[in-house]
Amino acid sequence: MGTKIYPSFQKAFIAIMFLLGTEKLQSQIPLYYEDIAPIIYEKCSQCHRPCESGPFNLLL
Image (cartoon, one colour):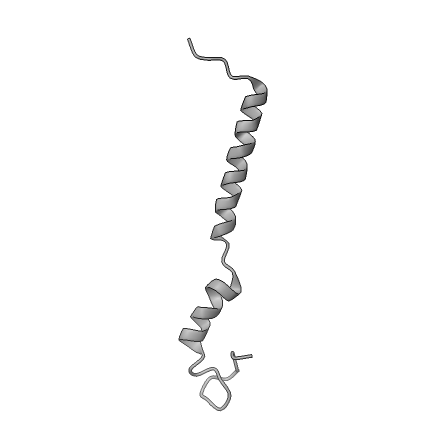
């Protein structure tokens, strides 16, 4: 036979697993200054700056 899991332990276990899961999801959300801005600067800023061929300035 299986072991009996107490409801309070089961609820606490589910809550801990939920919190650990949401922390992992938060680390996957891209942040502009950490994830997006470096790409724009590296790939786009050479043309998209004042007096260059890009039609608008990305270096604000």
